[in-house]
Length: 204
Image (cartoon, rainbow, N blue to C red; front, side, top):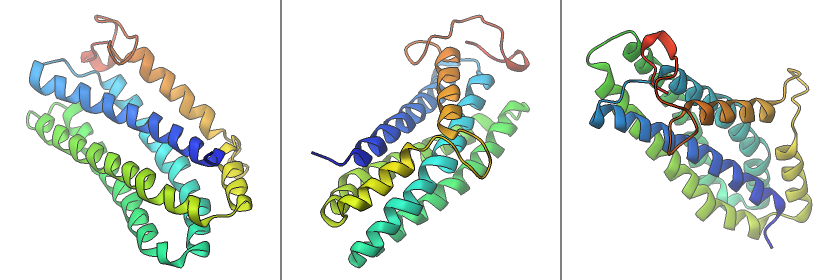
């Protein structure tokens, strides 16, 4: 049986991958079918990507899972370093995506192809990163870490409160996830066409 922390991390990966799939799906539909951009939905997806993976999931991986694996299995350091670099690359790609989304929202005629390409690159990188963690890192960690290591990792990932800021990141992530579902049209979510949208451009 896998440690509970492994299942928690996999569940979080699944939620992240679902939002990335939805983002790519919507942007592709805008490019290929002329779907009007739903900027409220795009911003909700970006908020989720920033709030959950970058401010909650990745820091927990780095601080607890990666640190424990380095200590227990020094040979894993090269892999951990690679994953850390990918976390940093993801941060930089998000900044670039935000700039391209702003240009698109401000009416730049050339922005959609550039934004679409950036979305594809970001989604592909994140999916490959998740697969690497689940197919390579997790089995290695299960062979290397102790029961106490896994207990500490599970406790870290199960925390809801951030005592430094007095916020509940997982509650915020769930709120954003539900917002995405309410805004997104089928088959992604429950949003309905012709609903009111952001800046007169949104189709829900």
